[in-house]
Length: 236
Length: 330
Image (cartoon, rainbow over all chains, first blue to last red):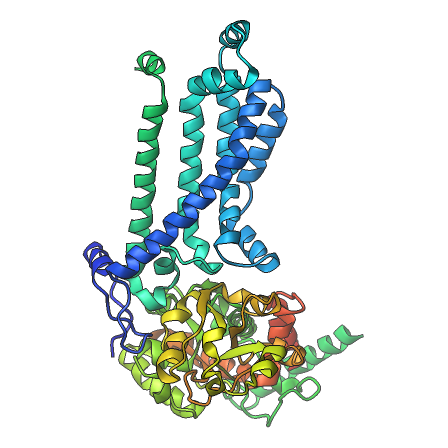
């Protein structure tokens, strides 16, 4: 006859992650535990990676192109800012109603979150590259594509990567609402308090935070590797 | 014209109330009139009287965050404020666990809960142990609530339960009438339900263990999408509610399968509150709640759900319409 579960505790949440716990609504079956955690963690990573990939494919080339041409600031910044104003939960609900549920529908919706920072930063990063440098490259006979690839992008890398990192964090954090549209992620622990209890809720939140930090760390590492030695010396 | 009549009624009601209080000491609330029910707007006696003593009491009425609960929350809130209470509402509590905790910590005064949910979720009963009789279920729940310093008021006439639903086409194709009919075909069928359905014994877990069914897949979706996924053809089966307006408004499109092994206990609404709150609020608190829920039978509840879910009225509008048409408020 257990009544309202005790308040969540850090220790309880850690235990929940590794060992299945009692629940009031499952008819005696235990919930949570390591296997479930891993399953949901993989679900969260899957949808995040897919969404980030979509956002990159759409926004990065566009941002680089607009930045290179030095035109379309209105588009880049306008689209980016409009994108930030979209409430993600509403979009997921709308898409789920109009198109359907599942990862193939949820990932593109989450990708919308990644478009603004990627587009904006790619545009700003490239358009701020010293024009004299670009002219020099052009004077050496480099093609426009080569200029973007070999001159502008390497110089703009810190800014471009900054956008990608914001996008990744926004996507991974928002992927917690995906269980409302047929994709099981760590949000399952957070949304289903009746099943998992307070410790499950806290465990879910901790895991999402940890995942976000890990992702941020990995991307920071990648950024350092991609940044050319010359730039590093200058900023250091 | 209509509003003139209403005003007239209020005036008469006020006069009647005055006469009563002047005459004999008025006996709290008006249980006196026999069945003021849903017959063409109640007489003056059915109208909720504002009691100036209640003005000192502030109440916060809660509800869970889906239409039926929000409508009930609104009905209780509006009725209590008509009775003279200072009423705030918090109609967005995520789950019964959250709602119960809000009652116990005093963040809300009370909220409507399904007796079946209270028994299975708070007090650990198996679904088949939930009494089918509404009063029995209420008494059992109340016994447990009292141990915690809480109290549940008498149940509503209507009961609501989860149900396995499908389209009429699918039902015909596989010749489905009861949940047991799914035996042998469930492995070809996909089931959609709320995220927590998967592990609940009064949902997927029960269908698997008590009926021995295995489904092709279970996909969690927001509760609001339970008909959309059927309409879009994504789901073969979806977890619905027996009070859903779609079941009567679109009975040619959707059917529910009879729960022949009773995995989904039916629940009447009981209003859960703290004893201390009920004492401080005085007799009008319980009396008003019981009074306005008298008219809530299955048909009325389905109609109210339809107003919100199909006709896109707000829960507030639907609640006001109900209270006015039943003559509880002027």
